[in-house]
Image (cartoon, rainbow, N blue to C red):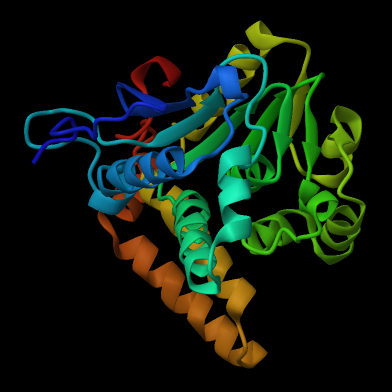
Length: 288
């Protein structure tokens, strides 16, 4: 199977594959890219499809036909806004659902957010306008977020008498305990300056043209890093997050992790290229 075999058919989300980059766009501009069940399922499918075709997971840069495996994923929203959160019809239906049905809906959402958060590619969110509720959850799951100066982010669930529980672990990991708690209680919109200060975004730019330039800049930088190292950095971080053993056991675990990386194909290539004073094989030729 090649990188380009059988891309999933979608209606509410668009995906373009350009070399080793996947570009996924929320495509309900008339609804401010609000998340409904169909869009959520399409995003889950695309995240899983691209993850399986990532260079990190395959431990290869190209398939047998020379088609690049994926190394970066860029997530955008079409139109004026990135994502206004849950579709109003979906929220209305939730009020009439049984507890079992609401749990199934929540499980689908968790699959969405975890699929993005644990994605083996380096993930970038390019954000304009609002990112509310689930939209805030999506950007919290990305490795790098760049936004325009008009962005507004909110954990808005509290305004409806509910809480950002499903997106909570991902926002919590990005912002920390005190900030997550405050924003969950306030449920008010965070503007660009504060979003940058608290770490919800990494960079603020003026407009859409600058947004494209900023995305290209971070993607170009990531391509100088080994794709397996990108993927396994997430595994390493998760290990730290979940560690319950002793400090000595943690040190032993990091030694094992380092030894595994050094003995891998990518680790050997990286060390050899350094000693031979040449670019590693994953580094684009125009960067050498």
